[in-house]
Length: 220
Image (cartoon, rainbow, N blue to C red; front, side, top):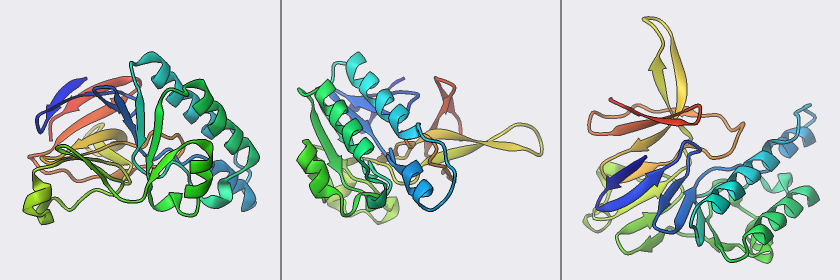
């Protein structure tokens, strides 16, 4: 789905990714989450991290992309860093070495910056501002933005947004979504098995649902 937001022409994908020109944005992969649970003694099956990375590399191979920006929470926790995870991250970069792999660090990425830089990632500790864009992890408070930042269009993550879609008069179902606000877009989590947060959009907001490989424009 191609939309215009604050003067930018961008493309939304059912995976939760956004493409602007030759840059691909994703958020909240939470790689290594299953390892964190396994080390806590829970019998969680493996495979989510590998699938997430394979999906990401597939995006990069199928699009004219020269820059990848992860909007925070690439990793789930430092304890989830294993030799297998490091190998998978290295293989992903080697599959597309011409791409700039960048991370706007999120709260779950703490204490992993140096390891990622050693693999070839460019890690930013602060929001990135380029032209009329601002790229960050946690969504801004729309009503509290200063005059300077109000002129910027923001891409962010952190919330893992979903929308409660009514099934009938009594039941609803949470569906992953892009939460498009007047000055920002909150991306759905790209990673699998990460959970979602039900949002409460305003009438001025726009919701685009990610449903079984398709995008549905939902009226608030």
